[in-house]
Length: 264
Ligand code: PEP
Ligand code: MN
Image 1 (tube, protein in one colour):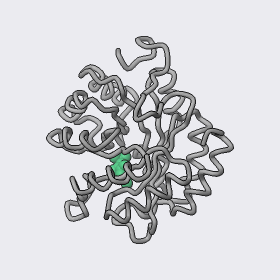
Image 2 (cartoon, rainbow, N blue to C red):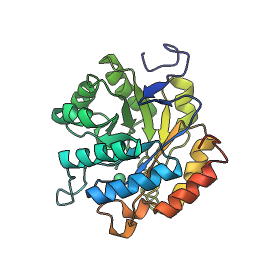
Image 3 (cartoon, rainbow, N blue to C red):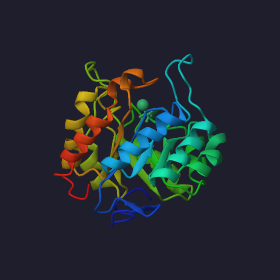
Image 4 (tube, rainbow, N blue to C red):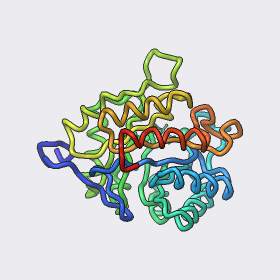
């Protein structure tokens, strides 16, 4: 299989906007769960850049559990993300939830995110295979390693070899945490596949105070990067405020992670 280490013994390095994911440098992707306003995303971009992030995250299309929750600013949100890239040099990673929007999102984003809920949306996977941009493929909340790798295979089979895995926690019997962050996937994927592995300690725990320790654990396990939710005022966030770091806490975490990953 294209995704397997047997097919491609060397680590895949994804080159995007002058950055290399899967190489020696660990990449930190940071930003709010959702793009809420121009001010919010520009302010967050400036502070995460200052702390050493290389990518700005933020959802313009939000897959929400309730249809009554905020669904995202859509193209307006994408425009604000692109403006933040212009102003900070951060690259943009953002989710696409509908095959019909892949072209639109690819016009603005540097990396397209496939959310956990869409890991096995095969129509969407085939569409991002044709978009010409790297893909961050989140693990479905109940997907096995094999199913996850086969989802990546869809994208690669469609002609796009620039795929990175993102572990964001799975559903278990534990209810203290929002999900159970399965860090064993880092060495498991590095054994079975050549693709980079990113860890999301925010969705993986659901609690801001668990983010920093799990981020450290992820780097210790060999993760190629982290994707972390940061919000200027988490208590006012329209989504995922409980798992979002303040800029100050993010800054502190980044300083600490620098001891594990000196390039940060
Ligand atoms: C997100 O990154 O904000 C998100 C919706 O993540 P997931 O698909 O992992 O739930
Ligand atoms: Mn979120």
